[in-house]
Image 1 (cartoon, rainbow, N blue to C red):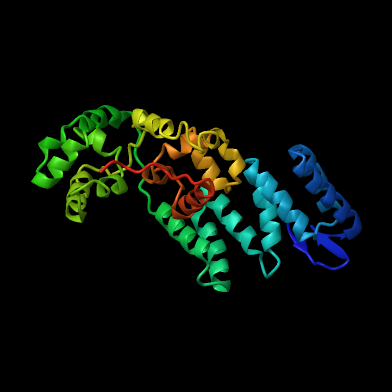
Image 2 (cartoon, rainbow, N blue to C red):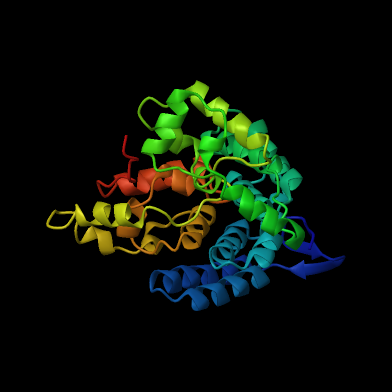
Length: 313
């Protein structure tokens, strides 16, 4: 849907549409009140009326796109974001949100174009710079072949003991102490977790990555729900403290970005108590969750005096 002109009239699809800014403002104000009262559907309805009254109202368009975005209505949200950024200068927040949705759909080139527009305006924009790294990393991800034909062979490979491979004494010792016995155990571990372990350095990491690459594997590729007992201990340690009540707070109240919120949903994280039981590496192991989202989660937790779980050294 293309919108041309921001004067008294707007042309959409070759037809001139009358704009009523006053009516649009009335509906926008009602939408804000509805949202404040927790009436999400009512807010959406009023915003649609605001946009209908004035299709060129960028404020109403952005608010409508944002609410649809947060509701998981990605297709419709993209349409409104695209309409907003057609008119230079494109709002930075709209470009960043649109880039997020594009990346989620695997449209990396479109996501890069949005981020480039932001960086052309502000070359040092911290969120855009980090997000660009995330998008470029996603483009380079190798998709696993899950064909039926290879599953039996893959299962047998993952059951192979790590002691069957020629590793240095240091690497072997660290893997043993971390209870990593098979290739299946190893690919459930991330680089960050290995490097955080005492005496495990870059040389050992390179050695293990090369060994896995020779088998068509990589660190973090088989991540699953592990360390449940350790996570429970993390939650228990806050009992009886000032933070105990905060642990029951829903993560939905943190007003996280769509990307961060989706990642927490994938990990089945609903409360702050469940969130702090996870490590940074576990969050980074979720597809499309990068440095930008991690910094956002850290900041939100810091406001409550909480931290993500550290890996035992």
